[in-house]
Amino acid sequence: MRSKRYRVSLWPGNEWTAITARYPVGSVVTGTVTDLFLPDREYAVRFPDFWSVVQYDGAPPAVGSSGAYIVTRQLEWTRRLLVNPVE
Image (tube, rainbow, N blue to C red; front, top):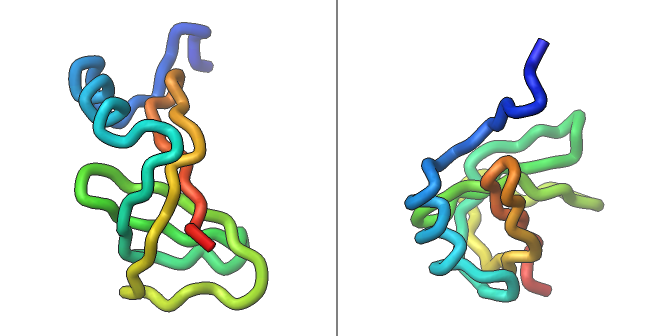
């Protein structure tokens, strides 16, 4: 069982501070689709300094395709960035 202080983190504090400063909410970044998770209707996107998982409706994007994504949230507890495709 995990304690209430357990934190799953991709970056130590100083690296997280740099990532959030580089990619504030509302910023647009180009990413490449690396994996599809068809049962969950999600796909993984790799960016220059981080990765994220995006949910989709309709047909999934092709692995290897690139596109523009907007940072919608910075999750402090898990130190993750949430993104959505720019439409």
